[in-house]
Image (cartoon, rainbow, N blue to C red; front, side, top):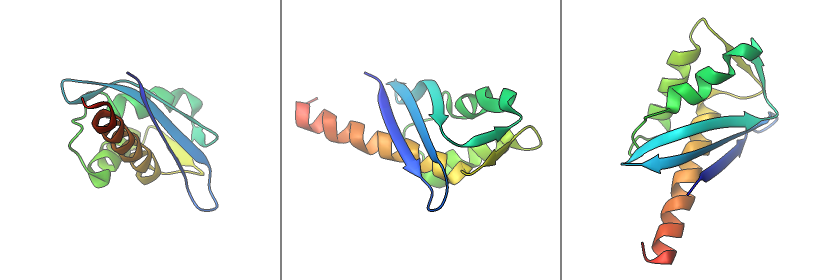
Length: 104
């Protein structure tokens, strides 16, 4: 089951993340939104930074992974590593709520 989360920075752009969870890790991570990334070719770095991350990290942990991946290789404009991390945490919280509602 694919999980999606979004976050819009105040005065900024929307950033969204979609992923599966397998064995407690984020898998098949795709990042989208109306933010800018320079260079555009750095987009795979965002998903790659989160790929394989444990679902138990907090926002700071996810943001640190994204920041490290972008270091000197890309720049987010209109969004931030913290915004992407917030989208991940929102997605995980929504997923946890669905799992409880379904009894799984």
